[in-house]
Length: 453
Ligand code: PHE
Image (tube, rainbow, N blue to C red; front, top):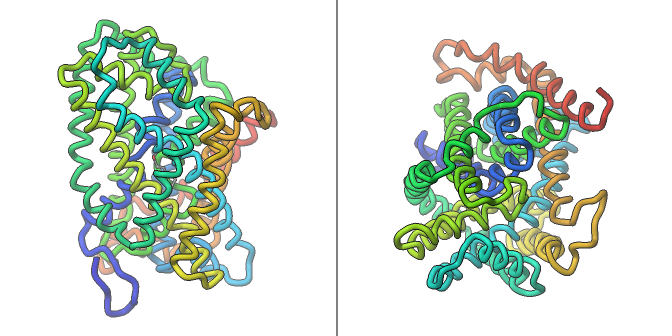
């Protein structure tokens, strides 16, 4: 990053820097933990087909819209709306983002805490002959406990606090940019291993064969939520990143590369999990615990299981950290700018709220498992509310704003290769998606899921 002369904001000087940070935010537990269990509980292939369509038709246009609004205004979400539409209620969209970011931070930290538990447990977990049932029991005992899930959640949030406070997030992002290719390689190795399993073809069939008769309102809503969650869109994260992009960054290319890499990691995770699920006789519908039962079983069957497990859970922890840093920044910047709080106070407030809510989520599998709202535990409620409702709602409003409210000229200037070159041929399709496809598509899925159509 370097400072420009015309603005006091730091900007990314290289294209790789811009793409790498966007990918750092996007790739995380959403790809490796959430995608497989959502696909597993929503029929596999049917979910996958909808997910891919939503990434292309809704995801890429919304990332572009966030990048455009961010780079044009060089500010965070509420301020971007205030600058472009002063005196209107549009800045309220920013509040959806802040609420969503805090809810996600709360339950995400619980799962990131599970990776820490497994990172440390890796040292002892592969010594005796444990099988799938043992890993299932072990994990069940762990998450239903009163203390360990809470301690790990708090530990993970404390690590975030220290990083955010010391302003070393750039260092962590750089470390993660170096290590993420290692993660990718590791996933490819595990993929090959899974493809050699006895029931690999059953797993692949489940994931890639779309049975369109299985597309129900809940599959559509789930796949849309997963697309938004996985790409970190609808809450202003990508808008903040866009505000740091150099004028020469090609926004459409950056959005597409982010979407392709993010989806690639999710598909790799699916190719690892489902052959193993069928070979080990685990139910694909196990929910949030699925991946934490499958991976240890995979590692226990590999030579040097302890090594693979430590490496994997460490990299997953790091990938989670770059995602939580990006979501925490949304409310920290908001508290600093709106309430003139110091960075220390804004960080304490954000992490403090997330810790309190995170504790409720951490206990949702144990002491609080009978406490449900609309049939969902607090953990599931936070996940459902943020991923399936708030993010698509935010994305819908962002696309309406970019497609209808701001001057079209802003979009074409921002999407041109460079300020001086010909307008890109993709400008019209992107504007079409922002005006019609994304808002109408999201609205139809919402109406469909509440039974209106
Ligand atoms: N996209 C991240 C993941 O897949 C999660 C995330 C959601 C990050 C929203 C930031 C904002 O893990």
